[in-house]
Image (cartoon, rainbow, N blue to C red; front, side):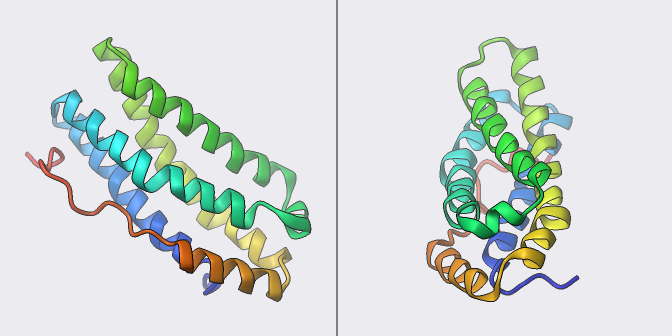
Length: 160
């Protein structure tokens, strides 16, 4: 199914999120320095993901139409958002290298799964149950508040 033009700004952000999830995964695979990956995740969390989640929650997850979305989808989105908050805090503060790496792996895996869930399940449900006026209003607000994802980062720790 083709994505509604009103949700495209979020899909653009999702693309950047997938790129960044793969960067973290690749960096961990090639044993890049954990501190560099930690700084990258912190930056992505603060500049991309946290604001993205805020847009989803304040623009999409409000109003009567949101209540028409299946509860399991609504809960899944919000639970994932809360888990990312906890993971970001853990990654920023963890001193034990093994636990830090585990949290980074979980962050990368969850980011990949979360984006795929929203694109394949949540957004089609929203497109099905939201009325056109609500989608148009949401699309206008999402476009206005859109922030391009982190695509440039030095050092490129994911490259060998």
